[in-house]
Length: 197
Figure 1: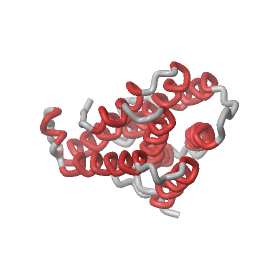
Figure 2: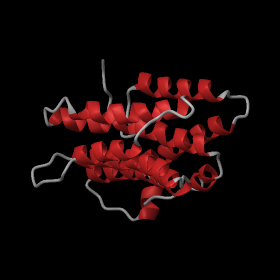
Figure 3: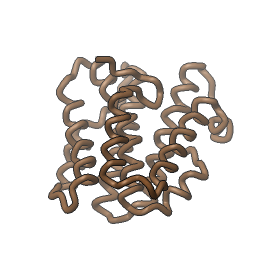
Figure 4: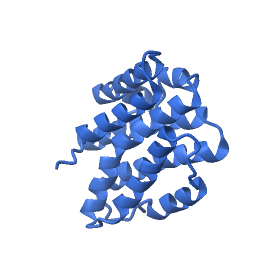
């Protein structure tokens, strides 16, 4: 798992900010999952992922929202893709997107946040690194992966998120809504998958 100093900083944020950080990264990974499902000609499964992610956003916006996270985790586990001999490459970023979302759900169930926010940060960066290695048909060490321009860009974006979270001038609900809307309008994943209209 690729590590970055940002992960130590994120761990020190309040719980809602760490969950917001994770939700933003999952929202950016969602196009990878959707694209894989489209390759499989399956239009229903992405709706399940999106519903679970929407409930995470709701939990951030609505204090004491009644959400059964155990049930959401069961639903998520039911849609995690399985790798077969003829799976397209996109199965791996799709699985990463599911694992990242499961980390948020586990954070609600366990009450532990820091280890989960660190994992989501690493999962997103690792997705980027593995995409680059596959595209260029190379195998790199973890140290080499960390200096890939695309991985540096990924962590730059995570740092930008951190700075927004840390900014005391940002009102909580406004920040949550604006980040969610901005990522959804961009429609582009961490590896450049664009959802289109």
